[in-house]
Image (cartoon, rainbow, N blue to C red; front, side, top):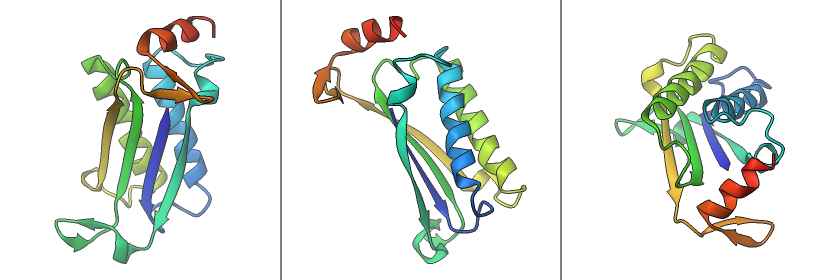
Length: 138
């Protein structure tokens, strides 16, 4: 489940980007009832992108921003309370770690769903059913 965390340089104190990434991933697992799951946890992956202010925009203007984007199987984030709870918590994590410097209005989150059967782990294209079965063993 890749998380792409994109931040304007300096929005978070140097070095806290990793903490933000970890806390957002922990939140996703928690909201899905998968904290500590031995199958899911190693498959929560991603990248942190730090961009200079002249390369981040809002309202067509250079702006300090944060983008939180998940790519997940189509069964993930399928309940409204999970969507609302995680996005509120993830936004709060970035806002808090910025020391309140980055307003919540400049933090965006979105979730992209993969087509069923097109989720690849270790070279195997897995269906939602296969992924669900694997998760029960973790």
